[in-house]
Image (cartoon, rainbow, N blue to C red):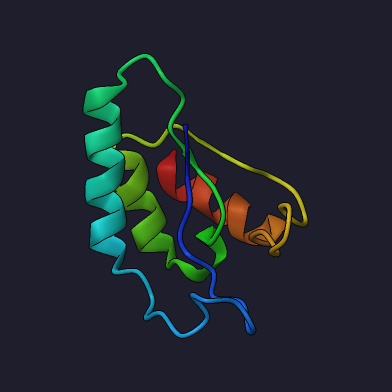
Length: 91
């Protein structure tokens, strides 16, 4: 189950939306984990805009996977060095 953070893109209807509160994302992940206990809850688009601490909280709340690589469908993904730091923090 991919969980995305809105990535505002110029020229789209949601371009002017405020940033998602990281704690709202953590709550959404926790709710998803409770509702779908056997699913992979994947932290997906928009992850690059989150702090390391916010991403760690997402994993504590129930996320158990990420998309790894340079880009998602339409937005850039987190840098490999940032992913390594995340994995080190989770170890």
